[in-house]
Image (tube, rainbow over all chains, first blue to last red; front, side, top):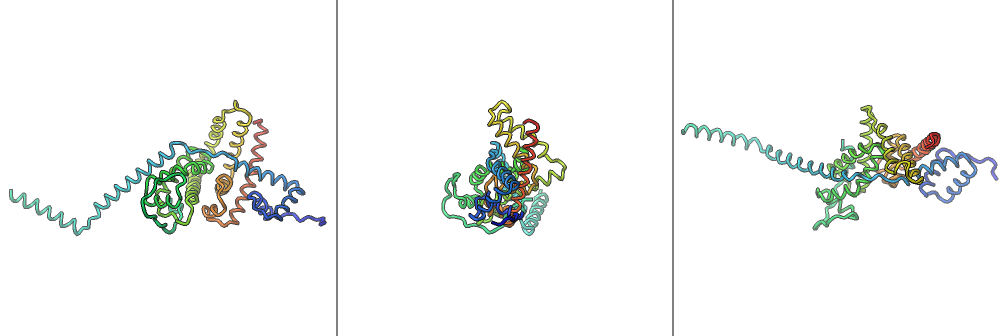
Length: 119
Length: 219
């Protein structure tokens, strides 16, 4: 039996811990981690703390959204849709080309002048 | 502000025929096509389906329910504004979390810049409200222990830095896959695993310290 056990590098600890938590360690790695945890007390307690932190996160009850959230979002999107439509209508009105607007305005001025001269 | 928060990409194909009434198990592809047609009922379904997850994510990120309420609204408004930019080959949940994460990180930066870290200000109040909602010290021991555990984990998450917080919440609370987290964070798989490992190590250390200080105070 090899008397000098090679210590795990940081990268190996990371790979083994993450793999163990994901349940995705190959059998050989799982056996190796088991051996390391049994023989290295510090590593064993480190893994226990690590595992507990993850299980607390996974078991933590989620916070439900307040009832007012959905209605508030939908109200804001409705307002936004209305604002977009109003803006589009305004843009359509002001998007008449100058070649159309100017002769129309001139015609209106001439019509007013003719009418006032006729009186 | 929202442009960086969305996934750019190609348009999906629109199905023909009348659109059926949406339900919670409505196929995502059909829901997306109705969302792109600006169908208000489809957007309402999207909000109702995802609001709890988005809100919970925000609460954990900013540690403040008021701020989370505000943020969740901003996130869904941003989703509504950018529906055309949703990539057809991406998953809707992933896209939503990508926007949510970016909004939360931006808000945390903004709060820090203004020197108004509301997460600290309101964190204690949130923990108190959790304990109060469980009935304070009048409840049976297991309920008190559950409330204490919840307060403990929330406080520990708050002590992580923002990126680490997002990673542990996405993976260990939301249960997203590495592929989904890679898409949300734009990080490579190795980087995600490595940062997640460091975040969990740090969290384990914080939890140990907090538990000790709780025990010392006789809580």
